Amino acid sequence: MTSTTTSTNTTTSTNTMTSTATTSTIASDGFTLDPADREAILEERAHYPYPQAASIEALKIVQKRHGHVPDGAIPAIAETLGIGVADVEGVATFYSLIFRQPVGRHVILICDSSSCFLTDYEELRDAFIAHLGIQIGQTTADGRFTLLPVCCLGACDRGPTILIGEDLHGPVAPDEIPRLLEAYA
Amino acid sequence: MSRILQSASERRAETHPLTWRLHDDQSPVLLDEYCRTQGYEAVTKALEQYTYETLTEEVKTANLRGRGGAGFSAGFKWSLTMKGDDVPRGYIVCNADEMEPGTFKDRLLMEQQPHLLIEGMIIAGFANRSKQGYIFLRGEYHRAAASIQRALADARAEGWLGPDVRGSGWDFDIALHTGAGRYICGEETALINSLEGKRANPRAKPPFPGQSGAWGLPTVVNNVETLCNVPGIVNNGADWFQALSGDLSSDGGTKLYGVSGKVNNPGLWELPMGTTGNRIIELAGGMRDGLTLKSWLPGGGSTGFLLPEHLELALDFDTIGKTGSRMGTGLLTVVADSQSMVSLTRNLEEFFSRESCGWCTPCRDGLPWSVKLLRALEAGEGEPGDIELLEQMARDLGPGKTFCAHAPGAAMPLASAIHYFRDEFERGVTRPKGKAHADPIPVGSV
Image (cartoon, rainbow over all chains, first blue to last red; front, side):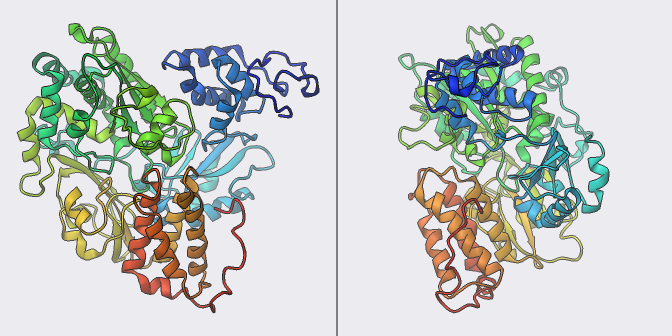
């Protein structure tokens, strides 16, 4: 995002718009909100008395399609909901499960809270780092996996636990990693 | 996929109001079966036989205390909620943002028996004259989300939700709101901000949510397990609820207790409130691999460490509160003798440091500082005064210094770990004064 204006009069459907040409709008970075996503966001808006309440769900809708939330999606969501760009940006930079950079096709959330820590999380983390060849917070070169920490996954009776997409796994032994990841192409 | 480790034959309606319907194969209890087994009878009874005042009074008499960890009387909370003919109708919000380290009980109830929660919310909504309910569910609970969504649709189709609930003339519906991470969303007022689509910073109190909560309207926030206790109280009465815990506790009801850590059978059990830690760890099959229990957390990362001798105490809010710790969520985290308390405390403070919303200075700046000191002690590179500084910080992070309970929650394991295991911390002090911590904290290091 290159422009700093806070106008909410954002063009979201103009793929050809360049950031240098926009003085009264925020650059969309070539982002176009998918009509189905726009529909889904408006549907979410109906669940609440005020549209801002749907902003987190809107970010999740966009992320579901794109893997992350591109900068250009922020003004698009703001316009769709009729709320301020800064409000959407504020939320999009607060919540840990909203990704603002491209991530791998599969995000591995590894629980690092106390119960998993006590059931040998550190060994599991080191095994993931060794197996994937990346550090926590990084994505593999082939774009397949991103490894991120997450706070307590609420499955402490099965620690150490990880969440890949919607799949909870636990307890995961370090030597099970290669076989476990086969299911995620 | 949490597991209740009592088999179906051990769980009965009279004694296990939260779990008696649950299947051994962990499949969810659907609407038909729920209704065949007394389901939604409490809604009918509440709508026909109670006013919102008498309903609140019944729950107050039952002494149902908040199962999210604070232990505040649910009925008393309801009685403080503004409601009346001249007050706009507000919201009942279920706090289903289960993220307290070591806690996995609400997951069980939501995945396997969502109708009990919905029934409890309908009754709570009626008692508080709410116009709408929201279930604030953490984003990572995908199975629970699917289970709740289906249950809401099924309940709506049968007229338990929607306009004119079962012909009562009362309109009430519930929507599912899923989060996008951040532990702080579990704090009552931060949760309301998050529900409104804002950053999850806590709000100043007063006004309390009961006066001005979601979108400025009276709002009641109750935990999943708390709400799941409501149908039983309405069906069987406050006296029955009180009697569930017998002589074990002055708090009524049962509790979903659990154990995690290096025990043989980690899991969940529904037991009378006031069951001892010893009994629960016995049910968990004791420590595994020949380990010995050195310490334990009674109910999550924001509770204080206790010693093996405290396991004989009744696990209820007042008894554990007298030790200086808190019962919290009542799910025990056990620590083996081979575990360094300095490392574990460092892990906990890293958690609180990362999850601080950054609103208040002591929390935002103090917690990363505590992590830096703990890392030094863990590496055997601490200096004289470090432990005293950590103790000072635990005091400065305590109640009343910040908007919410996040910092006091972080202070509790820190202070108690040093209190009970000071020698382990002292072993990390090896450097001369003034040499160890010259470097600033690297940005983004915690």
